[in-house]
Image (tube, rainbow, N blue to C red):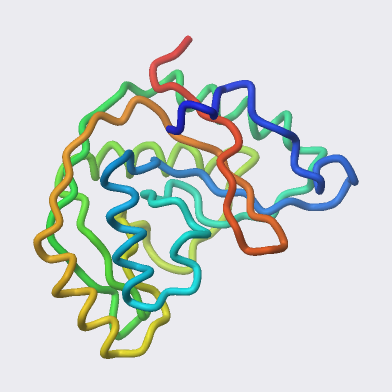
Length: 191
């Protein structure tokens, strides 16, 4: 979680002040220097959104909610965080969802079970929704790029290795510019 993000949240998204809907997501942020390394790889492969999406492991994919539900959502996320303990994550090696989806990723070798448990708890209550695909924790390296770029990403990510503690997860929102902005951090095990 970036130091600037706290459980109190940052600046309220403009959409939240207008009564409109808001697109949110919840994720484990991949810390530095690992996050920038993945973004650099994405940029080198030609991904136009490489710098618009902080490097992460998704716990709740992009989900549109009515802004009046934000207090309920934030209370739900705080309760989920309090009920789960910090854990260790190991990212190593590459994988792909092709041919089903044009995605290449770094595998979550350790911490995947904790991510599955968090995902199930987060995607309940006010955030209950169906998923297009079964949940599979991963870190995206390339998405929707030409086949040759996806092949290159698979090779590039094969040697990636990162180990770090996961003390929290982050609620982010996506603006009309397609940029994801971290908004509120939730410390695991915090009561």
